[in-house]
Length: 395
Image (cartoon, rainbow, N blue to C red; front, side, top):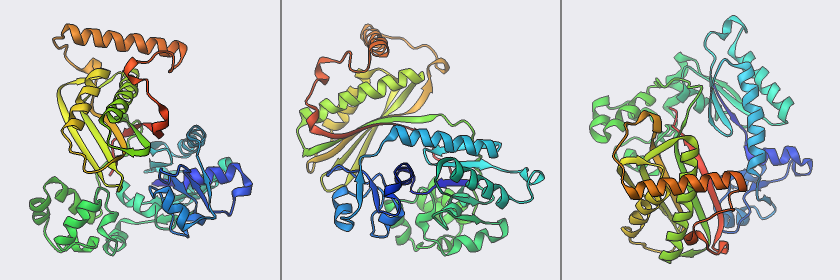
């Protein structure tokens, strides 16, 4: 079973403020930001998530634009997840507003999965005032497709025998992992709809796309062996900043990479994790996006190492135009206790000691109580900054 909250952030705003109900609501109000969520009333005008705010205002000038409150959304998310766990024995939270549940064997308690889903939808509506959509199917991939089928407030069941007919006319982009670039590859290979994938043998796709081709063929057949994982640990940690004005100034870009390295490094140390892969993310003024990664010989949680790696990635990248957003991420995690001790040097020891000392001071006196001298900078350059942890992708 896959449960997806309907227009979650916008719906929370409407539930908390009855005056907003029935109005087009957009979460995200920075002139240079993007839409975090749009109510269904706003979607009728073509507004959708990740759309530039300026574009959303043109499409729906009468919408109510709100800055959003992530702490409130997390609070409601915890309520929703608690209700799901109260109804289902095995639950995997996929994001702040969606979850998978393994309901195998529950037919002994309830006559049908539809009754379970109906009870859960009612509990969430009664407890939070929000609606959700639920998909029930033999595996996670199909369940996720089913949950989106009758939004909002929908319930769709795909039986094993109906899976093929259900999938055949859907575009290949409905398969997780098929983004814009892979879609173009598939279209060139003659696959526009999922049924087109099955007109060729598995070997054709593995030869053309490698491992991706094998997964593509499985999903086109409705096959997904991935289990519901009740406790999925974060697999990456990242931070990013959107600038108030586009910039190509290397001093500003490097400064914010150091700020991000501080935040990501502190989060890794708090988690007891070290990451071997450092990723630089740049979005240009035309909204084009590039990422560059470097895998280190040994995993790290040291702020300076994270920053220096990202800085070298930036230095090796020719900036075709001004930068709108810059981000830094660490992935390929390993737990400190799982790694063999490695030889260290005096500089690493000093940096580790400095990081731990700063962590302790911030824990006691607050995040702003101590900063590195070279992270002191004018905040007016930035309109939005975020820190996020991401789980491994499901399906």
